[in-house]
Image (cartoon, rainbow, N blue to C red; front, side, top):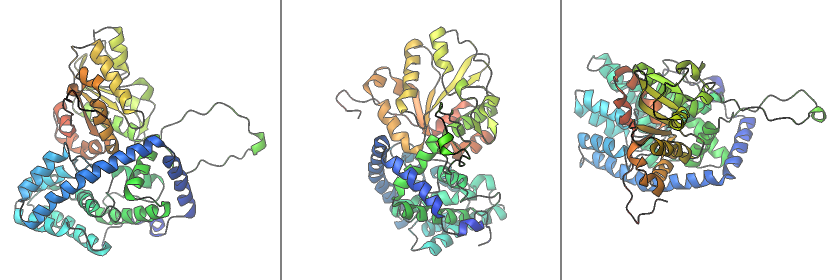
Length: 440
């Protein structure tokens, strides 16, 4: 293989002992957290229910009982609702497949490539060979001017196939998650250089993942949620510098304010939402307590208007709206969309703010979105089924989507979208809960 963007010398070596020990400490903290354990159990049950359904569709396609168009359209439709696991509905999953079906002129070629690449590889070498073959074929279509890079986006190849391989053998084939790559990068273990080969990058990522999984004694899903926990809490994987002051000279004092690292999912989501809003021509409001957060070296406050225009709906309503994480504003004071990012706090905290708004200003009609890590979306669904929120019909106003899906599709939205409606393609909603139907 030719590209070696992720294959730095330090990545070829085994993980250092001190790296493993730091991760063991974070693992032990997570295992002692009952809320983390409960969320992990819920996600495990959800995947055990949904995963076989996706595999049944895939095997029907491989057996010839399901056509390419039926395979693509079913995956696209169902992954937006009841099959929403692994971020598979996003720009590198079902949406990537949609683009291939739409733009590759010879569908027989695409069927042949998918038939070869979707089945579980027998070993690392065969998986690398099939993924590279698919990636090279897409680049070949581009070189032959049958399609453009924008239409097929070959670099999305590793995510699609790693997700399907994960469903067939979760312990052998980790999903190529953006959040996991970010944490590995912060630890200095992984780097995706510009113009590097994404297939090389995935197999470096896979080796690191499996080595870490073995060292920590965690299965794939548990490691995935540990990484998500690190991302949610902004916990640095690297330890702080040792103090040069002798221990007996240290005096207790107020705890220093936590500074959120640039890798935080919360800061990333706000930055992406603000960037998309500005690209669409809207003014952006970011809650004042978040403006010192940074992403990609930029303070979030640089993207926000300095003051929220008066909404003409009363002081209590104005103060409630000012606390919302991100707002898109059209004209002088028309709110186009509101976004609450719930990455580590209780999911219901953002929903309570939205329900307060529904009570204070029942005629306010702008769409509301809850943005959360993919692993927490089931909790969002559960909260929107609460009797309180159902009675306020908040579930009819509030949609939700994952931070991972936002990150994967942000470039496309900024390039091609021309209105706020584009964001709704990422979102899903819950329906009415029947009178005796439990919400828990």
